[in-house]
Amino acid sequence: MSNVDRTDGDAGARRATALLGVAVCAEARAASLNEDYKKVDLRVSFVDAFAPERLLQVHCQVKAGPSFVSTRAKGRRTMRLNDETKHALAVASPPALLAWVPPAPSSRVYWYVPEPRVPVKKTIYIPDHQYITPYLRYHLSRVAAHGQYRKGLPMLSVKSLAIERVQQAAKAAYKELQTTKFRNPITGEVAITRLAWRHVTRKSKRSTPRVSALRVVPYLKAFIGEDPDRYQAQEPQIEKLGSQTIERRNILLWYRDALNIDGVRHTLILRIREEVTYPSNWHKYLLSARDIAQKATLASWWVRQTVIR
Image (cartoon, rainbow, N blue to C red; front, top):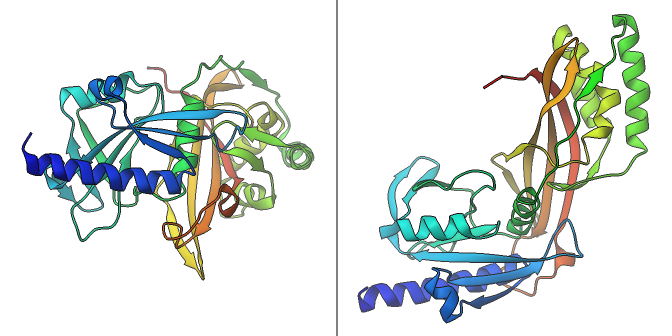
């Protein structure tokens, strides 16, 4: 490595350390000699956003400069990982973190977090919206939770009902859900409001999927607080309101073979609407975890026949 590359790398590590420490409300420090030998640049420690009794340790690799990005397509960057970097991200306890510091005049630091239970690929994609903000603490916390051991959930058989009785039974079960507190490992506390009910029962929704969704309402309580088989945090809507920034995302949770409907296995999908609010100038002043708010609300649910692979 040339002296210029080393200088860029050291400067990038300092920049990533500073932003990570503030955004994630964490202690970030340079790796020890032993960790550096294992291709770890930073160690980041912070309180789990969804389980405050737990302290998370994240190993982070830092890349700086344009040479690490192979192509720049609309909405994302493509980065090819060498064997050492790929191996380091694959063997680290989830979550592992890769930070990329672009050259000036950009002031952002972009991130990539491998999903647990999925092999790390040599070619990765970093979307434009994936830069360090206080949202990252919640993303790392859900990856850590999903990476833990998960016991399988039982398949529940959905009771057959006459069509004219389905909505009445579903309405009673949904009212019961609204009085229950749920905490999902992926999203934290989940609020059950009329949002999801209005979406599922809207008049524009076709009759067959509406009836299917209403039939499973009495069984939702068995899954809302459980770790899914897989999840996806979709692209956010980022809005500035005065001195605050709000990142809104839909998070999809899949529960494979959750329900047996008329003798056919079905996968249950929940859509959770998440809002993370923080000061727009978070990187300029003191930032406490109390300055950041997160809210998760059930937005919809539906079922699909399980595809047998």
